[in-house]
Amino acid sequence: MSIYARFGVKTVINACGTVTRLSGGRMHPSVAEAMAAASGACVDMLSLQAGASRVIARVTGAEAGIVTSGASAGLLLGAAACLAGLDPTRINRLPATDGKRDFIVVRSQRNMYDRVLTLAGGRIVEVGIPDRYSGPGVRDAAAWEIEAAIGPDTAGICWLAQPQSLPRLPDIARIAREHRVPLLVDAAAQLPPADNLRRFLREGADLVAFSGGKAIGGPQASGILCGRRDLISSALIQMLDLDVFPEYWSAPPEFAPLAQMPGLPHHGIGRSCKAGKEEIVGLLVALERFAGADEAERTAGWLHILESIATLGGSTLRFAIEDRTVPLLTIGGADPDTLAAWLASNDPAIHCGMGRRHEGLLTVSPVALTPNDATTIARRLAAWAA
Image (cartoon, rainbow, N blue to C red; front, side, top):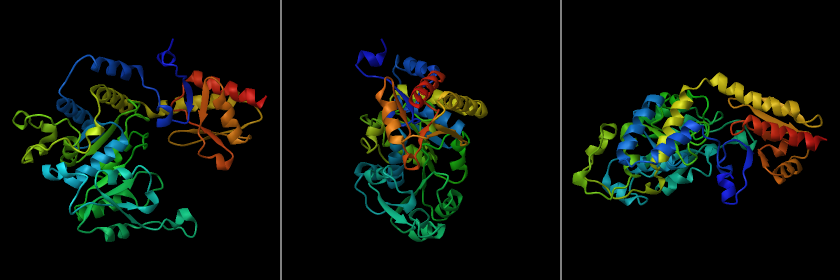
């Protein structure tokens, strides 16, 4: 009996990708083994985060990094770091703020995850008119509009890492540096390619948040925040359990800026963003494995899964493989709502991507699939086609 069956829960085939609602992807056995090993002993969490910082810095090129409970948690902690810095009084007061609290966000990049900026105590200031999305024109925000929005109350700039995002990150980074404004990047799902672990920092970001439970292959409730040592130190101190006597607490070299604080704050606004020792160790093992993998080999494996579905999935449906960083299979030739409902009604339920139903298509991502899953999907589609 599987662990899920023990609790009366049915497993599903996740062809949507590493989406949270379907529990993300699959962890490599070495990651699961590392998490189990980590659970068998106790450690000082500050020391463990210092060890995590050494690994994250080596892999990303950042000055420092921490493991959080997800990319969204990383954004909240990054925002809190921009708002409070290393001032324990300001840390204690969040989400109440005085003075700098504005985060500049391009209007076309707004999404439901950027609410964490306001949860930390910030205020979102939108710039630009996304005519290229609404249809009346082709323009979006320009770098000068971001610069014009910077004022005495600006705490940071938040940029959503997507291939279509404008203005480009280097242009915003130049402005941020000139005005000494921190630049926070939401790169939750921007892996692969593995080079993106370094790219956004290389292009001028001060803080970057990644999901640990997507392509990295770590625990679903894990993420990475990496970047400037002073900001990472602030983010960390706002997440840690600080129910300690200050005279017995000291900052490790990885987070040396914490020694500048005149006193130790109380529990920070990011306390609910904590990651456990098991998640931290699992994420580090997964990160090293992801960064060291052969990307061509990984892509070839994904293509093989999609090709097997397209080859065996029946003659009445239309299949096409789109060449992307993560290849995608599209399925046409049937009403997408009806087909999706039928696939999900069987046991095991198969969940396909519905984001392109308006085009008459279902999509299949290979990231969370095994070859056996692919065979099951192909047989189910062939049965539909018959």
